Amino acid sequence: MKIGMPVLYEYNSVFENVNLARKLGFDFIELNLNFEYCRKALEKPEELKKILEENNLEATLHFYDEADFGSYKEVVDAYMFLLKKYAELGMIAEIKMINIHLNPGPIVTIAGVKNYIYEKEYNSYIERLINRLDEAREICHDNKIEMVLENVIAPKHIQKTYVDLSEKSFFFNYDIGHDNNDNDHVMEVMKKTKLVLKEFHIHDANRKTCHLALGEGDLDIKKYRKMAEESDAYVVLEVKSSQDLISSKLVF
Image (cartoon, rainbow, N blue to C red):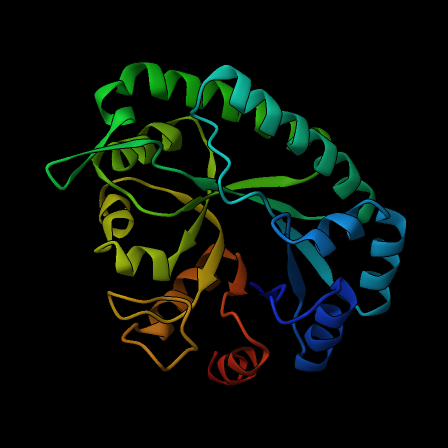
């Protein structure tokens, strides 16, 4: 198991995050393409690799939050272009893993009830998703990077999606706070379906709010640490401030 931290909103450079990661004894940092300073750092991969090596750190990469690989061709083509770009840069910087959200897709709200278009059109959706994620996985593997899929929310069609993707040997990132706030749907899937967990996002939660510092919510953190140890996974302590990271590292 390796323990890392996410890049922080309060900082304005990768170097500031690296500095904190070194001081706290983390094994890696999770770069995030939603942050401009991460994109700029990846444009100079040799420099990024040098900074990481000098501080005895590895790095993983969080892909764009809104990316939906089950969407229609023109949209996914754009994200595939970006994935290839950053995977190629990431190989030079020796990025270990790329994390992609498993998004539930577009919603139609009728009389206050959310209806998921992908649930209505599941057969065509899952065929598109598997085909495009296969392409994405190949891009990552060609650049010596592991690809993992992260839970956001898991309505019924996403629960079924997990089963179908597991049969195609995809790897997953289990975000425990997201799942807690979503009534543990992914955990329920895992009771019946073997998911290969290569990464965990660990943060506390209370059924309403997540990304809390460890000890500020209701989760049994020791249970999830054991799961991560048994999976020999990368673990991001995914809290959102330096103070929460300091206190969470002490608890974990």
